[in-house]
Length: 241
Image (cartoon, rainbow, N blue to C red):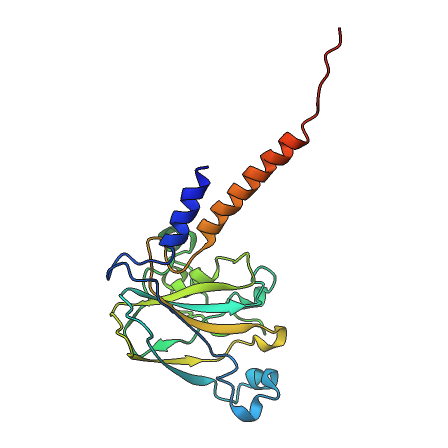
């Protein structure tokens, strides 16, 4: 029975922010992979993305639908992408450059950049192969300081996932115009993937995240019906003298 209130509370909390009169979490999602392909190349998007001579720079412009209180998380999202199978994506680094000031620090787990990724390890020979991904590592900067790589290296179990890129530390008001400059480098067209930019405020569970609430409800369902079936199929015993 305890799963019922836990599930309801976490579902409700995932859509609320601890600020601004408990306003709902505001999330802006913009797909850009196709829109950033120049029109003459849209009949053959794979050729476009693989041709290094074609500029891949692109700009997105959109209005803020609701007040967004800082900090505002910036994610890049990939759909239909099996990260645990497509190892060529390990060094995929987005080329996002926000007109607003973006904080790129503390986006990775502290235990990772303090212990797991070495301060004395430099990726000068990490990308000597033919497959690089969307961007290049900085060979003169230690791995512990390349937090976007650390974030990427946490493999997702699902084919659609978001990776934290940075945070905007300025509130955004309704109808504010946000301009994002990016490089549309990484090839998702070959496997039918999608690339999206996500801006999101947070609740005490993070951004929009129904996983905990849904997981609690699923646990309740399995517990209730599992025990019901167990009782129904319980064998009868006879006592013989």
